[in-house]
Image (cartoon, rainbow, N blue to C red; front, side, top):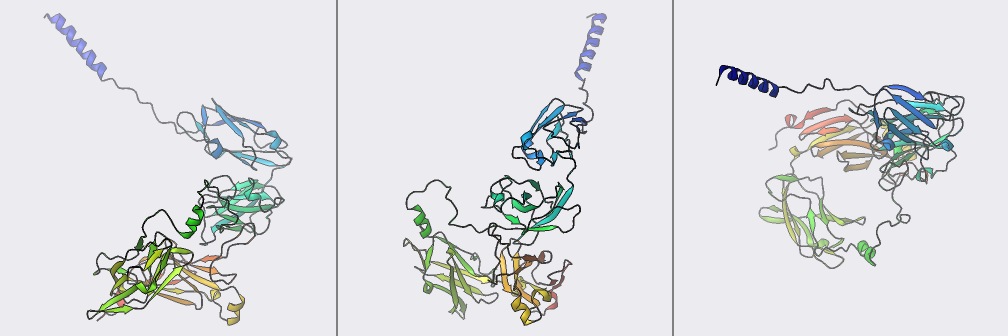
Length: 506
């Protein structure tokens, strides 16, 4: 090969290899700037205007998404606006016939408007106009709490206003005039309201239709109509409650059932061919302490049952002799599948639950299988203690005070809202000597009707739920610790590790 040809091949190869290493140029920095509004027609904040068509022009191509959720008109229109985005324009169409005289309208877009390529949101914009000669500027504020706990409730909650001329049932029939969402502390604020009277409600709006539909939804109402003011003076407190379903008024919306099925369900008869049950005791190893002596033994069946109390026994060993323990067998007509066995058991002791043949049967004659369950109870060191100090205002220093006023009941609840203690307050100090390690909260019920329990409200009956007063912050209780806590205090409770101060047991 000649030198001339060799040089040509060498140069050609270098060029090919160089081309293979060429990389694509980077696209530069990502666009993070939202669209810029260049103009709006008609102009924003006009008086004596019926703006039935509004056009917003931007500096770049945009897209409009999730209009039904993000775009809101206040006051609420019976027909929602039509919102479209084409190229660099957004057009809003309102039904002119729905616009009322002398009314201020405010349109917010949420996160509906974004730039086309990067999705940057055109946020925090509100377009306002008035069909009259002034802008409504009054306001209302308040907070929403869960009536059963006394704490703020914000999940899925909307506060709504209806005209005072509407009847009490408007909230179950039609959409409101105005709405507001509470913040994470339960506080809400209406702005730009007219000087008219309104009915105020709050709804846990599960299906987002801005109305109260009963069922799993909760509701709250203010006792009287409210009138907006030019500054916040007296915030309104709305207490959400779940109504007790009225079985006589509930319509059957389920598919038609076979004849006789309803009767069988009332009798507790199902398609199960055996009667089974579970027991809330751990029998895996009787050397381990597993049962709380402050609790009851619970039997939960799969059918409604009849109990033969003579065939349920509890015993313990003493010098190799089975000693019977007195036990009370309790049932609850509202829970026909649940049986409680209550006995005064000692600490750190092994017990045996005997369920003899025929101890339980269902309405069809099926017998529950017999059982034998051995378990050991907790020791004193497995528990914590709480000393709760209550202000005298919840008890009263004079006998006449407690008789004339609504009595107060104290509730002790676990973190999962299980009620462990409910008693009428008869002293300013209450001792809890055996509590399992867990997070606990306290609350007080103002028992207005003096029936010994908390009562929910009734919307159409205009009955408010009974007041629940929440106590201090949740308390995390550890084994062998004793806490002293003030009900009304948010300060950290004092705690003493009881095991360090107590003498060892012999």
